[in-house]
Image: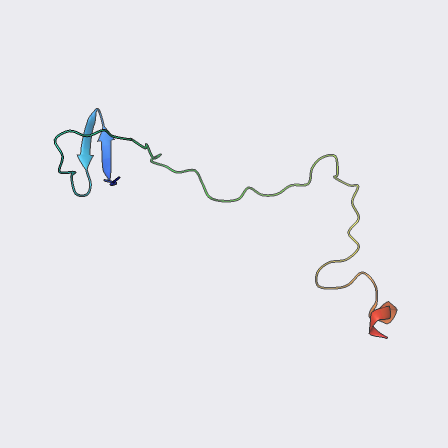
Length: 75
């Protein structure tokens, strides 16, 4: 069974942050976590240069493109 133990590694020394494993010899799998994880902010979206100035917005979520009088499904 695998068990996880939290520790820090600095200058070749391991310092246990939680319970120390009670074994005299063991095979280890080491996972190194970055001290400063990358930012979770999503990058700002920009318009691709090949589309800039070529798109015309006809409507939005708040108002329809066509007037309600022209909606055939409402008649």
